[in-house]
Length: 359
Image (cartoon, rainbow, N blue to C red; front, side):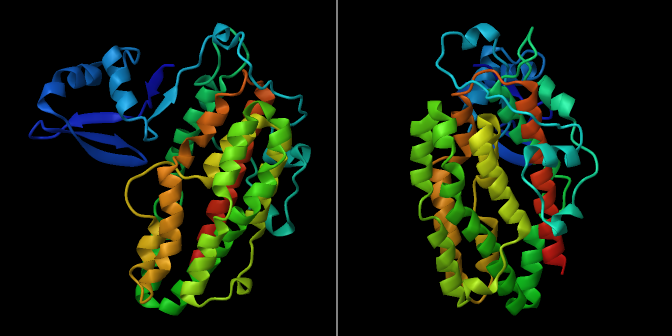
């Protein structure tokens, strides 16, 4: 397996030549480098984008692979031979426009969501697909597609309201200006999370049959997720809020409905959509927890902290790629279905958050 540094990955030595500054549109960090390692690290930097197969480039990216800074080079078609992999099932979808995709995927929108429907696709699908196309075929490597899509999502979110920390900034402003409204906002967020974690098991269950090659892994992951809604119930209790006072938004319900549909019809989309529920790995504190700790009820952050701790320690962010490893080469229909549902869902959720927090 060859790790390809994302094309926008930048590595620069610090002024004192003791550490590396890593930069991408969605992440930046400083990496301390031991004196004995500087030689091979410099060689990796020199070959980072011109020769990613260089052994030192691979060594460096392997050391950074906990973070979303790379994608996986498409394998040759021969690499899939004699492997017991899940074949893509027949599907009939029209991905030419968002409206046609919704109609042929048969996961209808509520009336209120239709106003947020993007009229045309805005992502560069061809650029994404080109990173995953298996040489000499019209098929796509599922590991390449999902690993690049995770990075593409992060880059796209960096241009959106929520991705520019609009959500986090709105929470910080509320906790400073009107704590009552702040707690109501936390209640609303917690209700969406409660519904997702409460419904996840039911939505994922069809994959146990329709993605049977990964049955054991899916079952293990589902068991790992059981009871996570109780973390959100703890938040409601700590804030003395009634969970039933907060709505489950149509966008939240639709996302779980689309996930259930994927579990029964497209193992590739099912695998990729886990990334919508499990954030990419990062070090630090859950952003919602950080805001709650600025309030007069800092103990209410515990539910978010416990949930964050389990997800990070169990590396749930890696589950999309673990599942993709069970998949055979994918057809254009499954690849574009995955891109379309991703683009639609992220747009719906971004607009929902912005509208709610600015209300």
